[in-house]
Image (cartoon, rainbow, N blue to C red; front, side, top):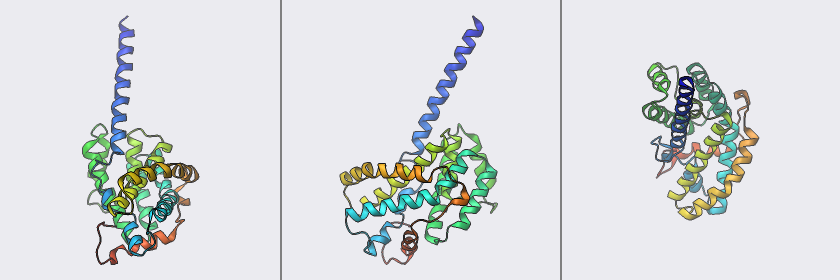
Length: 243
């Protein structure tokens, strides 16, 4: 009888821990988490001033291209980090991505967002103490630049996301943030933005499946024009976003 009670208590504790972890997973994808993503437009602001995006139809095309580029270039880093969420893998992926990114505006945005995500994750998700340990032992060493994609994959892996969900989650936050930027740039209204996000979700799923589970060595740019446009952001006379 006593052993049965111990097993039952252990099962209840395991279920409780899984439930608590699920709340943390949802919080990671919540826009209220202060990671700085909404300070960046993914080059959309520069594209608008270059008159590449003038109306909602152009916006949809731009968003799809952003998702395609995110899938081809960054999902391999999410996948690798989520599969092996440890300090050694994170540092290796960070160095590779730092050498891969040629657009200085995008590179700085990646570092800014990644640094913020790691700081917030270490402070918020205290049930995963290794996050704070990895951050504390990496700060000021020069061994890591804190790029966003590897850190996002790392956090997903430590919070119990499987690799597929981790990659879809990254596509989701990218879609969410670029459409939010479009709303603040008055390309689309709040209701139109919600409709667009729902419609493009189907495309995002197809693109996720297309680029999912690829090795880091396969990471590539599929829409180089986006990279060029984002690189022009620093030359804008007036701007609302950092990138």
